Amino acid sequence: MASENEPAKLLLPYLQRADELQKHEPLVAYYCRLYAMERGLKIPQGERTKTTNSLLISLMKQLEKDKKALNLGPDDHLHLEGFASNVFARADKQDRAGRADLYVTFYLMYDGFKIA
Image (tube, rainbow, N blue to C red; front, side, top):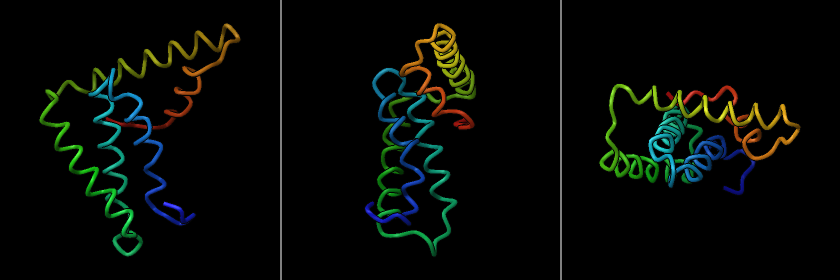
C-alpha cells in the first residue's frame, strides 16, 4: 500500500486496533475488523485496487474464522459499550492526573468510531 491514493489505507487504523486488541479483547477486535470490512465494501468498485480487493478478501476470511471461535450474540453491543466506557474512564483519569499516556491516546483514536 505504497500509493497515497490507496483506498485500503482508510481501513488500516481499525485493523491495527483489532490486532492490538486480539489477545485480550477478541470480541472487540472482531467488531473492529467487521467495521473495517463494512467501510471497505463502501469503496466504489471502480476505485478499488488489487491491493484493496486482496485486503477485503483476506479480511473476510479472518472474520469467518473469528466468527467460528466467538460466541456472537445480540448483547455484544453491551460488551462493546462497557469496553468503550472503561477506555474512556482510564483515559479521563490519566488526563485529569496530568499523565496522558497510552489510554488517552487510545481513547482519542476511537473518538467518533462506532464499531457496533
